[in-house]
Image (cartoon, rainbow, N blue to C red; front, side):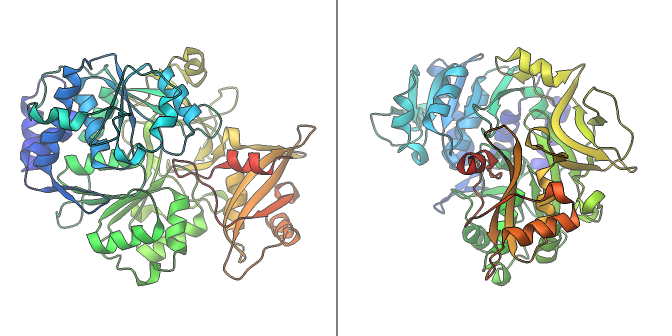
Length: 522
C-alpha cells in the first residue's frame, strides 16, 4: 500500500512536497498499521498518530505560527515530541530542538538567538522547564499534554476540535526547515540552518528494509532530536514502526531488541561498546536484528570486530554531520576495508556527494595522503544561523570544510583520523586522540578510554587518558606509557591516566572531552 502511494506521489505531485508532509501522507495511507510504541509500552496506530499531528499543526497555525517563525521544542523521547516536530514543519515554521543535557543558561542563549516565538514542552521536561523559563521571554509557551498550569496551556487538548487533515500550507524547497545545534562540547553550540529540499531528498534514496519484505522495527534508544529522529522518519515513511525508549540504558536496549523483535537501530560507537560490555549480551536473542547503523565519532577497529562477532554481519557504518547530512556509508559486507594503523573505513561517498582531501592551504592532496576533508553536495547546510563570517570560513565555492582529518584510498574508501580541533600539539609533533584510543583498546587492562589534551600554566599541551578498567584489572600509568611508546612512539604516550567508572558522554552520545579537560585541568 505504501509503495503504491509513493509511486502515485512521484507521478502526480507537481508541487514541492516536504518531508514532514510525505511522512504524514504515508502514515495516513495505512492507518491501521502499528506506528509507534512509547517508552511506557503504549501502541499508537499510524492513523491515530497522523490525525493527532494534523490537529496539532492546525492548532499552531490558528495561534499564528507561520513561515519565518521559530518553534522550539523542550522535549524528550516521546510520541508527542515527534508529532510536534512534524506539526511545526507542516505549519511552515522553523523547528529547533533544545537538547537534554545542556544547562539552562546555554538553552536560554539558544532560545533567544533563534528568535523563538513558541516553546513546546512535553512531560519529560516539565521538571526542568521552570529554570529555563526564568531566563527567557518567549511569547507563547504550551505543553504537549496535561502539565503544570504555570508552564502553559495544553496544546494537544486545545487541538482536539481541529481538522485531522493536512493543512493548506504551500512550502518551497528553499523554505527553512529548522536549526540544528552542534553538541555543545566547545562552548555555545552553533546553529545550523537547514532547508526543506535537502532533507526532502533522503526520502528518494534507496531504502533497504528487512529481508523478506517485512516492515522495519526501529528502536529509537537515542535522542529523537538527533540522528535517531532521521531514522525514525525513514522507518515511518517506508511502512515500518518505531519503538521509543527514554534514554540509552544497555540492559533496557538489549531487552527491547529481544522483546520487540527489533530489526534496526542507530548507535554511536561508545554506546555500541556499552552493549558489548553488558553482562546480558550473551543471553539476549539478537536474531531479529538486521541492521545496526553506527557513526557520529571515530570507531575502534578492535570493538567493531568484536561487534561483528556478536551481532553478525549487520553493522553499517556512516559518516556525516549536521552541516552536510550523510557523506559516506560502509555496508555490512565492506568491513574488511582496513587502512593505515588498522583503521576501519567510514565507507565510500554516497551518490551525489563529492569528497576531496586538502592541505591547510587548500591544495588537493593525492590518494592516501592525510589532510582536511572537504565535501560538496546538494544536501549542505544553508549556513550557520546569524553567523555569516563563520559560514564563510567553512563554506567556499560550494565546498564545505568538515573540520575532520582523513584520507581516501585507491578504491575511493574514506578513512578518518580525527577532528582538527581535537588534535593535541605536543613537543615533537601532534597527536590525534583516536589513533591512541584505537591502540589502547587493544590493551588487556583497558575496557574503554578517551584521550584528550590538557594545557599547563605555560599553555603547553599534554596527553591525558581516562580509562575504564577491564574487569579485575588496574591499569598503571607506566605500563600504559610503555605500551603506547612501543607501538606508536614516545610523543603519543599519555602523561596522566585517570581511572573512571564510565566515560562521560555528551547529550549526543559522544565522549565529552570538554568535560574531561575541565575536570583534570591544572
